Each structure stands twice: as structure tokens, then as C-alpha cells.
Length: 172
View (cartoon, rainbow, N blue to C red):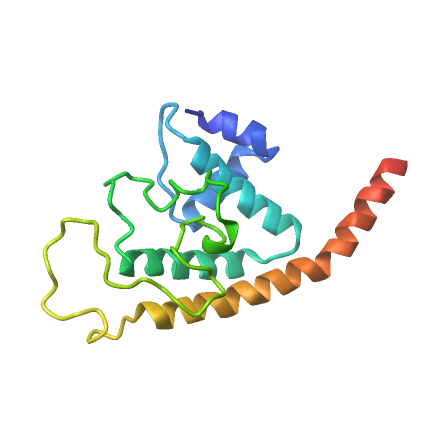
């Protein structure tokens, strides 16, 4: 487990900057060494995407879509305060994982399928089904796919500039 200062040092960012990220992404905070490797991996991904000129607003939009999709798929089975971050350290099956949370969907993100109806949490049933309330996992997944595709296109467009900057920085 990491302290908040450990996170700041590992990410080469100020504690003020990280505190702002925690606030804007509505992440849980800990007073003691309670930050997991997955928590650090999430913050690293956000910092990397920001370095590649992906706006924080776009990342927050994606973050909210991912959390909504995970909620619709009943991904919270542990009761952990960081359940939506707990997959961030995983490295297997990258094409089956969401970009920020790294949650594995069980099918390729850009594929046509999604295994619906799995509920691993022992929660009480709702009065109405999610679809009747206007929440449809396939619709949310489609929203995710559109935003994900735009982010990936932006990253690919920025990559030559980052490579050029790194080459230039080596000469400085």
C-alpha cells in the first residue's frame, strides 16, 4: 500500500494536482497508507492520457460512462471502496478491458457482444428493470465505444508530436 506522498512521487506530480484529480474524479481518499497498486495504475493512466493531450473533461466523461456500465453489469462484488479501480493493475486481455477502469467485459470492447444479466452482487431486486428505467448496458457500451474510439484517434494523432518532443529533449 502507498501513501499519498508515494503517489505524488511516483507520478512526478504535486500533491495539490493529485488532490484535484481525486476530487474531480470523485476518488476515495485515505489518511494512512491505503492506496493500492491499482489506484496508482489508474492515476498513471490519467496522467499519461493528459500528457497525450486528452482533455480532463473527456477523461471524466469516459470515467462516468465506465462506472455506469460497470454498475449495469453489477461489477461491484467486493464491497471495496475502490471496487471500480481494483482491475486497474491487470494486464491480461487488453482488448476486453475498459480504458480507464481496466474492467474486463468478457468480450472484446469493440466487438458486437456483451454478456448481460450476470449479477454477482447479492443486492435486492429493483421495482423496475434497468431497461424499463432507460438504462441499457448495450446503449451505454455504445456510448463508451464512440468516446473510446475518439480518444484512441486523438492519442494516435498526438504520438508523432510526443516522439518528436522526446527526441528533441534528448538533445537539450
